Amino acid sequence: MTLKVLDPRLSAEGDALQPAPPLRSLDGTVVALLDNAKIGTERFYDFVAEMLKTDHGVREFIRRRKPDATRPVTPELLAEMSGADALISAIGD
Image (cartoon, rainbow, N blue to C red):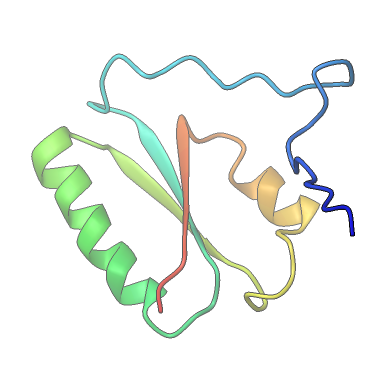
């Protein structure tokens, strides 16, 4: 039996996505928080938002919640978060 390992990343020959350049600082930035709708995510993000605001000077948060954890984020939700300087997506189980 032959074992075939698949690489889930985009092909280097295809339309590979490039990561955004790192932010020099979080001071004065807008950070989007994408909630996956699991039980602990909202509370976790409350903690993260307070820490980022207090310790790193984040100015504003855009918080959005997916309908449920099994579905990908909708284009509409992504558009609502498009003005953010950074986006955090997390699982809160």
